Every structure is written in structure tokens, then in C-alpha cells.
Image 1 (cartoon, rainbow, N blue to C red):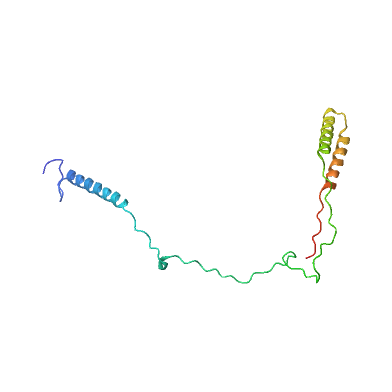
Image 2 (image 1 turned 30 degrees about the horizontal axis):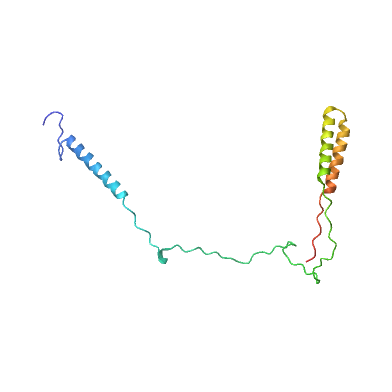
Length: 143
């Protein structure tokens, strides 16, 4: 036996390494070839289909909310009550006057022409006017 050569059962160390490299390369090529193959189509037959799950439905509680229950008053519904008219709407000229008035009020406050108390009084007056102009809900007719 010479120095540097190790003899095994199948040959030298270098020969075994070469065989392992060739074998692993061929396995890698075989794996990529098999990966490119097409998988078989799934069977679409009633025996292989997924069944829907069962849902058991029982009685449900009834809400005692007045809206959800029928009101039996013993009479027919009536629509004879007079309808309330909506408040009169502001016209374009009135809107421009109001806008000018509000702009003047803000400018007077900035310039110090009116006191803070006077400004707050006028703002409160305008807010009260807004509250009076809000629509009022009409009562629903009996059913």
C-alpha cells in the first residue's frame, strides 16, 4: 500500500467521492423530472364529494319589542289626522342677508367694536333660532 491512498472495499477514496457525486447528480435530475410530471386530476364523483354539515335549527326566542309585534286596536288604521306642514324654508336673499350679518358680527368681535358678552348673547340668540327651526317628528299613524 502506498502513502496517500486508502483502499476501501469499493476502491480509492477519490473514486468513491466521484461515484457519490454522480449518483447525487442523477438523483437530483430524476427529482426535477418527476416534479415536472402532471398530478392526476381529482375524482369528481358524488362518492368523493364533501357533504355539507348539518345545522340543527330549533325555536328562537321572540322579541317583546313593540315594533316587532302587531298591535290590534280593534279599529282600522286612520290617516285623517291633519298633517303638520314643514317650516318655511330660507330663500337665497335671506341666506345672503344672514351670511352678511354673521360676517359683520365676527368682524365686529375681531375689531373690538362689540364686547364679548354682546357677542355671546347674539350667538345664543342664533342658536335658539336654530333649535326652533329643527323639524319635529310627527307621530306615526295607528296600525
